[in-house]
Every structure is written in structure tokens, then in C-alpha cells.
Image 1: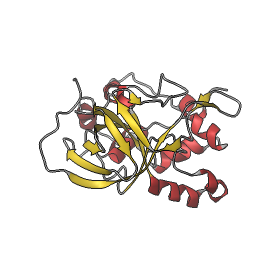
Image 2: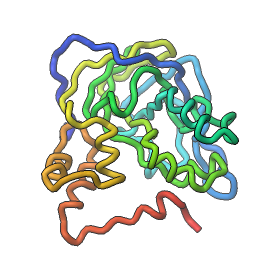
Image 3: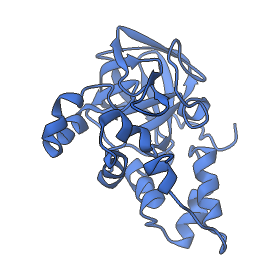
Length: 239
């Protein structure tokens, strides 16, 4: 499969543990659109090529599909949000960021693009980080939440499914392969959002094994002199 790394054989390395598994269906947002932000805890999730059975999205153009089969979010981040925004503390619960997996023990700095993971009976691969959008602000009642999340780096990451399976709370997260040890999720986030990259980095990222085709295409476009980007609509939403 183009752009998908072939896992190297290695002894599994324990990275962390699943604290909660979550699923949801779209609900109306205050004033505009719908979203599955605020997913709820379930006993188990069955993960297939396109995501979790019974799970759904308010916007299938930008969410779901093979490159975003699952969203994983560190439970430790929720504590940081409660500390940063105490007036909203009660809202920062597992599922608030739309995650399917709330986990402990690993974050964007300790996980790399292309990492192959075994979680429960499923085999998954880190495909890209998250690009926060205006729906976060609508969900939390703070128009600046998407910008705050982007600046904080507390965004989580997406996983593609290599082998379907079932995941439950307390399942271990094991690393099977790491083809890109120099490209943590955090580093790629900085490249996307802060443009912390060189021309050589762009060439590498445009062909990085395991990185989602959409993000590889983004980095390839940045190599073009005429390329321009405007993230305003993603962060602030429609008028």
C-alpha cells in the first residue's frame, strides 16, 4: 500500500495502556453543524479498516476513513486542560476531544509517525497528527479553543488499521515497529503548524513512509514557490 511502512520484526515494547474506549454519534453543535465530540465510554470497540463499528462523524469529509480510523488522546492532557482553563474543568473528560482511545503513558513526543502498535487484538499504525478545527470551540463554548489546542500541541493523533481487532480498557499498547524514529508526532505537528522545517525536511516529509497521503501532499505543496496557505477558516469556522 503506497506510503504505508512495512513493519520490521522486533520484540514488542510496552508504551502505555488504554484507559477508556469511546464511541459516539453526531449531535448538533450550538448554533451550527454537528459533531461527535464528547464521545462516550463503552465496554469495547471493534476496529475495522474504516474505523469503529457503530461510531460516526458529523463531517465525513475531514474525519474518518482509512487514514483516520481511530483518534487517540492522552488522558494526561485532560489534567493539563483543567489546570489551564479551570472555569471549563468539568468539561475536560475522556471523549471531550472526540477520541476513541483515551490512553496513559505516551504522548506526541514519545510516538512517531509510522509507528506500528498492537492494542488489544488490533494492529494499528500512526498516520498523522490532528488538525484542530472550529468545532472544538463550538463544543466547549470557547471560540479560541482550536487555536489554544494547536498552540499547546495537545492534539493526539490518528491511527490506520493494519489488522482489525477488538480493544478494551486496560489493554496494553505495544510498539511493534518504528520506521521513522526521527519524526515524532510532536515534531511533525511543529512542521505543519509552525513551519519548523527546512527544504530538506519538506522533501523527506513529502515521501515519509507511514505519513498520511494528505499530509505528504501538504508538505509537497510547500516546496512550490507559489504555494500559499490560509488556516483561518479551519480555526474560526464559517461566519
